[in-house]
Length: 85
Image (cartoon, rainbow, N blue to C red; front, side):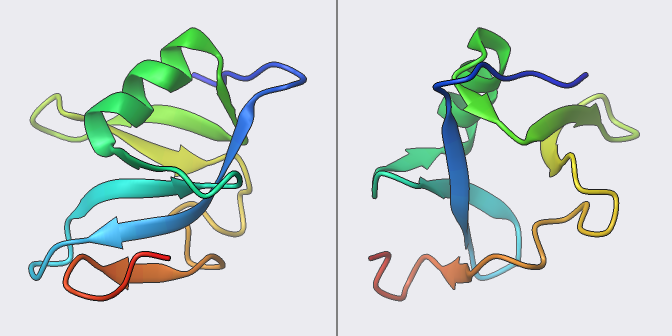
């Protein structure tokens, strides 16, 4: 599902844990939001440029609308032990 409104936020950073799992996202305004909040914001249409997908266990996750970059590989990926700014 693709969501987003004209004045919605844009994900500019992905925050991962030591296992490489996405745990949070950085927005264009500098806010860091947890993965669950990001999913909720996508449903509300306040984050654009992404779509919701489900893994084989039924867990939801975000992917970009860019077919050349489904896994946010073109934006900074920050390990949670590093500085998030």
